[in-house]
Image 1 (spheres, rainbow, N blue to C red):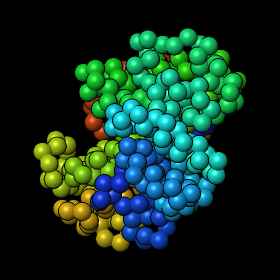
Image 2: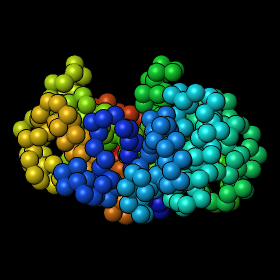
Image 3: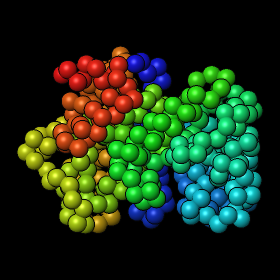
Image 4: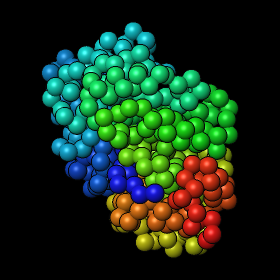
Length: 341
């Protein structure tokens, strides 16, 4: 199974007073190169959005986002009053007039027909899918654009439906097949929101997803955890909470010593600090490591080679078990060589 579209990770960002603006090039420690885009939650930037709207500026100008970097905006239904949909639509319309790389996710399925929004295919549509004509009408208005599929393979699905993570991941795959079953003018690009760990990167490669987004890179940092390079898993380096993860081993330390992220290049000991500085440094390290992994995987010839590389790095039994189950059910051709190995 070939994946002609390279996978891109669009990190979800929140203004929480501690998270550094990783896209700003004037920060030598906290700037992460190679970010293809940023995903914001409207509920988190609502006051900033009002100010931007009144000033007549753009998000790109006000926030210092470089040209060529995509800007994605999610309405965040759970965090924004329902009567804010019109305000959101006005803000989106003004941004799109001045920025061709600005993408806004529809606030709900009922708004998908509006040409200002990128349509969403929520994970719960798996149980009650819309008619094919619904998605076709959306596609005809726009042509071939990135298709956002606002679902979560992890926390959101687990909280709302108390499903196992395997079941939630399978729902994502089923929804992906549904989206591609609609009569699109061309093969749609798919953006999965809620994926961004080592395992879900692997699954995104199998499904041929073009974009994934997650806040896991900085949430793990808040829990005191870092990514180990080369898809070797997550390790807790600061006992900030009672989050249960493996601690750093000598083998992990050896892999970490080769990390070239902005933090490790300057002062690797900052990863082990408590407080805001330690959190920021772990977040930058996690994002850099994830982007470097995806870049390396995109350089391989096809999806089977990418999956083989990912499987070699997955060192925790649950992830390998989930991956093999997924391959059997959704990508037997890609998984055939892996099962023999």
